[in-house]
Length: 329
Image (cartoon, rainbow, N blue to C red; front, side, top):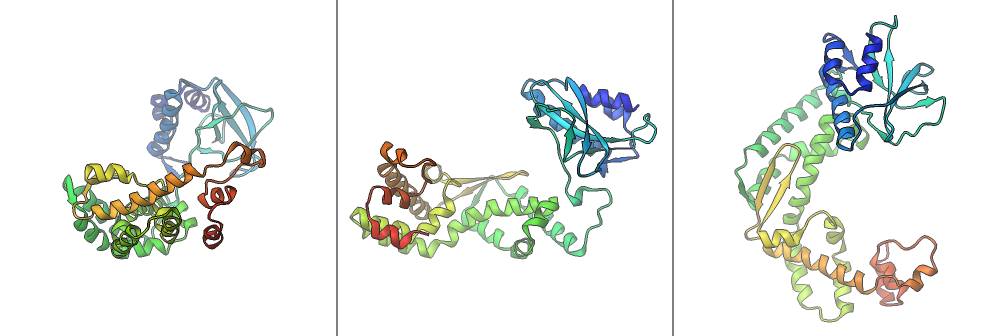
């Protein structure tokens, strides 16, 4: 069976793996089906890029999870690979299989695209949740259920009121370290969805400031005045830079929130002026960046090029140096 499992992995043969592996055993500390599904996901990725199987298997020594033990690298000619430690007591039965995080091979191999995977602590069969974990899970499940229940078009204001009702969940997640968010799937998933929504919620939270900023913008006439206006509001530009296509939102009249569980259309009627504010920030920054982009002679003087920073560009062109000095981080 040990040899057959190796061959099945080599051939991307998921059906054979279902037959060969024991339903009652866990593999890599997760249920058999979950483990095989992870393998299959990697195989699909390889197949989508023309790799139908691993051509070779090479042995190596594990330097981390099962230090000193013999592992193996499944390798394709196109560079797709999977480093595994297959545990067996009798060279016949497979007792466990692990993805090896650090496998040292005897010879140099063309290992380019890893098909390895890992599991969070709360995916493991022996995971026992704390009371805090259970509370966050219950709140997040309700949060997701509500998201899925939204009608096709939800008003911006109604959506924000709903989001604010989950302040307890948001606060709990904020108190969890980044390290723990990487270790627990629940915390990572919940934080990701909430972060996406907060990008939208922050648009409305800027409501009062936006009105004042637009009035101030209308009082600017020269490039210098507009630059000062931009840098006085730079934090808003830095926050949304590259995150949201405001021109598309303004044209269509709604925001599409896409998460890993559902999609919600949020109608912005009544808040168009906020979108206009962010568009002015984006347009002005793009205009100035294009105008003061480094010239060939600038690049000739720099081996490493320049960061994409308007203040750096202004300094290169010897323009508005007092503004550069005032607002440079």
